[in-house]
Length: 457
Image 1 (cartoon, rainbow, N blue to C red):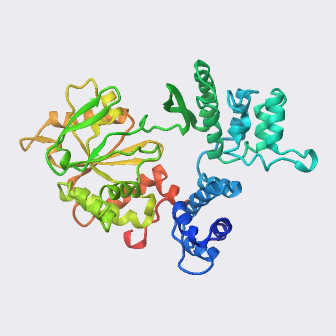
Image 2 (spheres, rainbow, N blue to C red; image 1 turned 180 degrees about the vertical axis):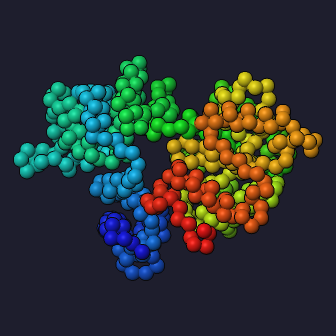
Image 3 (tube, rainbow, N blue to C red; image 1 turned 90 degrees about the horizontal axis):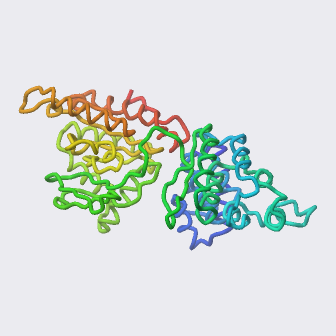
């Protein structure tokens, strides 16, 4: 059921869609926003019917999407603010210090009104009762025609940028730091200055790409996760170990020389917020368009790569427990991943003549670049030729140390823990605590990350 706060947000979404869509276009607009309409009634009733069981954070994401698509600033901003509840803010003090760092040069080489239009409705903002000028016209007058009239701090006040959503403020920073706005050594100096300010709130501007050889910056949280973007996700082999090589050693582009028929390769960009099961299912559906139940098909294919009852038990219990709770926000539990072609691992382990661990049993890519390795340890982790072996154990813990120093989190289970009567409760306790630590449940629902039903206690 919708709470009073959720109901107000759902009503605002319904009002926008009712006014901006016909009955024919309403279905597509709802699907694009991430929900399915109710079956009957007016346009408004169908929207509210589709939203009635929606969780708060999911509802906020829908509000943001609808607001952005139909240029409804207030709805988009409300959605952003709800999405950011419980996350570290960028304070007004930090925003004022950032404004001072820009001074009168916020837009750089770009016209500042062009920078602002995608972010604020400046053509309809402003005190037109007294000045008869929109905020856009005032910005041009005081920052373009007379460029020393208003500085960035004054403009932030006019825009309410000191209190707007972090998402909108981030998009403003990213726009004015884009190479179209400013280039050259001065940008790196400015980025360093801004990062000194932002780090007080736990954020930084990170060069995440480039345009014509110049860095493109994005705002990100400061975290202990792995630096850089994951790529070359090769996993779920059901046959012999694939033979891997570099198509481009500089860019760490991997080619499978042999065994490609037995493994999967996820070839889409992976967001900083990780990889969701719904995204993996979407990718699988494009590879197998004739499948009637894509998620079930993918689940069977991944499970086929598991070679022990313990691994199968962990995999099965994970999806049985968390898929009904987290739904589209469920992180993908990826089996049998060849981790040593991850760029972070290649850098860390480049001094080794060989890789003692060819693949990891399971990988989770969670928000803020957190990478979780789960290992299920059987006898072979500690023995050679069926005899206890200190060298085998030493190689394993040495590789663990290097991975942890690269930013990975590693959790080990004994195979015997994951079979038998107590296995389900053990697995649930582990993932409950892991998701609480990384805010996975709260990001999806806005509530306590995972609430355990009585039957599981």
